Amino acid sequence: MRLILFDIDGTLLRCGRQVAEVFLSCLREVYGTVGDLEGYSFAGRTDPGIVLDLMTAAGVEQESVVAGLPRMRRLYLDRLEQSLDLSEMRLLPGVIRLLENLETQGEITLGLLTGNWQGGARTKLGRFGLNRFFSFGAFGDDGFVRQDLLPQAWSRARQETGCSFDREETLLVGDSVLDVDCGRAHGAPVLAVTTGSTTAEDLAAAGAHWVFPNLPAATERILAFMARGPKR
Image 1 (cartoon, rainbow, N blue to C red):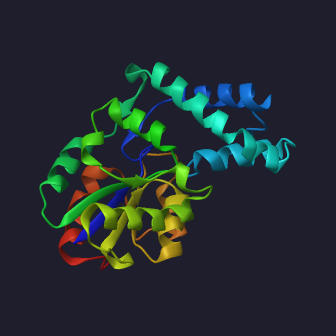
Image 2: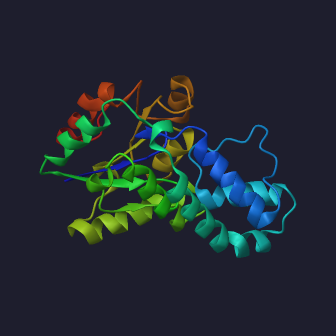
């Protein structure tokens, strides 16, 4: 058995600026500021981690940031569901074809590993009808940093399938350096695509096992992993 865990933003789809605008409007309402966005990258970070980074850097006490998180999460998820505009989103090349191909393979389990709060992840995927491919995952609800999420994904995969997956049976598919860092922290291979905001050079330098321009180009490697495991 193999477990393949997909990131969402920049890997499966792109939402444009609209999600950031919703997120920042909620930060302003809950904490009174959006913080200093100059040079700050959202790529690969968890939703609560972003809130904590920006608000503590803006001088908000960590205790107050954490206390405001339930309201922030609730407000953001409600607004995202109401306002996320499909016409401003883009499904990345080859996503449906790849997921349908993988879904038919008897020895593979698909899941999510994303920094989105679960409700936000489901809202984004739902705009393209992608939730049907992913019955479980690990989400921003599970930790402040991405490295905390992989153990949660393994636990839920075991609950879902009755199988325990080790690091060599797990493939992370993502588009950011933090996706790569997460896999490396737990000894799991990472296949990276450059459909996000990170260059192939930076992904390779971070230690991605494989780097491809998009998912269609990566399909053969993903199927080979499923059949033979993570040999380079």
